[in-house]
Length: 366
Ligand SMILES: Cc1ncc(COP(=O)(O)O)c(C=O)c1O
Image 1 (cartoon, rainbow, N blue to C red):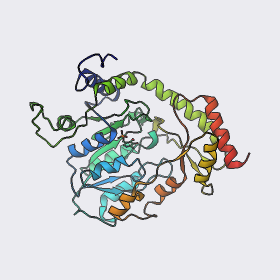
Image 2: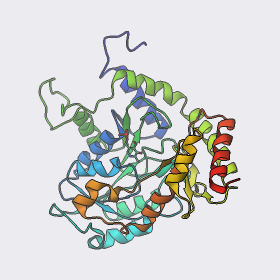
Image 3: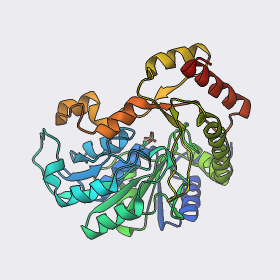
Image 4: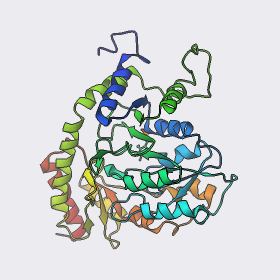
């Protein structure tokens, strides 16, 4: 309401305050607020100088935006399969891919290929990837690391904040996220040059000194408005409290669901010193008909959703790169068996109990 009662609805003090809150929370030197996580990833790719034909190692088990942001610049995503326990990119395979990238290229390339430029790991479902190993590989081979932490705000890996392991970290604030600004995203980096460039690119390419109608760069409108930033400032004050609530709900689920045959509950590695519960995704045994189960649960008012569908098998990816089923078997297996159950920090224990009872009933018949 304070913002609405001022004449400044964009490019004002609230976005500055929001960025300051993020610098404080993560310890990063720079924080650049943008209007989505996807926009944040795109700006990192531009700032890293990743362009047509450049190769970037990333995961096919993610929300599509982590790959799409590469395609916006005609870069080539080079997929590496995942660790079956966490669902995060397999660092050992990344190490192999870096040494022999030819072997990992998609079977169809419609752009001449250029150099291997970066690694783009995703902290899937709020659990950090093997970030120290991946960061080490990147440094050793002179590659940029862009960490997609859109699902993992507040998570820590071996005691260190997710998003701070690479050259860039990106967070997202869509309403299903741990905290929200309506729409929104934010980049953190310690790189002064990249910070300046990304600030210009999010504001239609206006560099410091440019007037409203002069544009040093080809830019975008990726600005986060003042109302959204004000929401972000307020949400940041409650972030840890909200993460704690989500953790309690996740524990209610794990206690109950680990007893049900046919259900595998999420695995948290010891390296994850703090999980930032974004979604609660279970895996069903191979024999369970997921679509049938979803339909039966829906009749009890319990929505469940497949989560994720592999990126390499999305129709536009198949068409462009010639991917086939079987190319990334672990990703595909989890893609077939993963199910997100209703999850938020405001669920009551009785609601969790009801979801679990319905799952038990519809899976075991008891
Ligand atoms: C892993 C991942 N990357 C990127 C994004 C993109 O964020 P946004 O929806 O804010 O563009 C999301 C969230 O939707 C995500 O889960």
